[in-house]
Image (cartoon, rainbow, N blue to C red):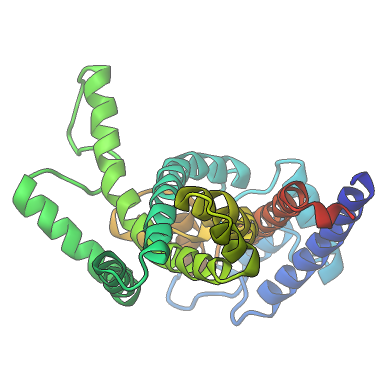
Length: 319
């Protein structure tokens, strides 16, 4: 087990190095240079360009730029080209904003998908199965931004409450309880919207996996022995159907960054996805590279967690 974990850490460290190199090369080869003079901006003089190049080491060879960038990143000295603020500080603030959306959306997705998928598989062909299948494919097919606007219109017109931003504009000085409830209310709608697509997709996977396991010989043998239906479904079938979802569970971590760009943009939620999108539009390369590097780290951490969990639930992996 220790040797397996050690090999996995070494492999993922090497992978992270190559990801950082490829990401840096892609940014370097992208059209347009950060030090390019904008003819539409008369304040952007050649002297300013030269000072900018020296400040951010753009006059150095490419491999030196790579080493200096990650040296500054790991020492906390990397700053945004847009506002000259520390990159790690900006990302940390946005991370704290995205974290509640991620946690609530993930909890809703995983707690609702399995009951729906399991019931659909057990009662295959029933009214519940057909209805859940229709709703799932409807939610998968409808564009997220369109569904978001429909939800905003419905909530605002029927409940007459604001849903944009992290808190009500002009709330002023109120009691802590009122502020907490206002924050929770603004969190509910984006979280529900973010969870709908995940519930639709994951419940279909759960249903398909359960149907596959229910047809295995050991499940039929359990039925032939006269075991109760609940024990057959939930002890024998479900336990083995959950194995593929251990891998999927480890891959939800990257959703902290890239899984909520549309939702954060529509609801004006200052999270990491929206920050990455704005950095791309502004060509704020330190932000882009750092977010991409952190995304790779989250993916590798998620796969490592999946490896460890898979080894824990499946004894064959330890062999």
